[in-house]
Amino acid sequence: MRMVRHTRSTALHFSGSVPVLVGVLLFLFGSCGEHELDQRKKVDDFVQGHRVRVEGLQAVMVLTDVGCIGCNRSFSEFVMRYIEDPRVCIVVSAGGQHFDISALLEKKDRIVWDDASAFKDLGLLSGTGAVLLNDHEVDTVIPMRPDDISSSLGYIGTKLK
Image (cartoon, rainbow, N blue to C red; front, side):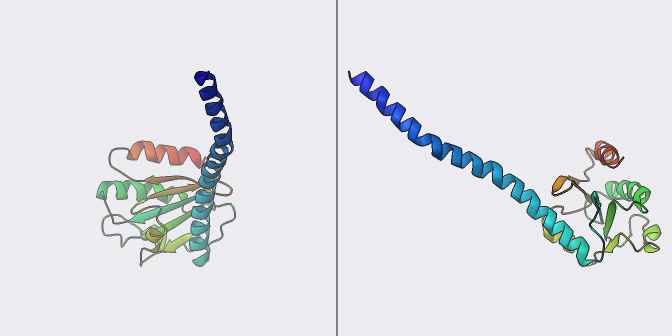
């Protein structure tokens, strides 16, 4: 008899916890999307604050002097392919001491000169890298690192085809 009573108690306890469990799961899954939306809003606000249109924007590529010099140089060469691409905004937080940014000096439409490194303050990237966007949120943040630069550049290129 005790066992039956214990089973009922457990069943009642469990059934009372189901709404709480469902609520917690909904909160967790719902808040994940909000975070990406907040990140996208930060990116959009930053870009629009520099008079760059966000309509159709699929990537923000950030060039800095921070980190691996070879990575920064490789990424800057990669970025030059997208100077005329209306889907890409290029943020330059570098002086060009370690790589050539002269081609960017002539362009104005989608180039943001970020001398104060304000993009870093958004909390998405602390150095050179790319932020890939979809319609309403940040899709992927890709920092440039020496151990995976080739695969990172390949992934970005594939996403922007």
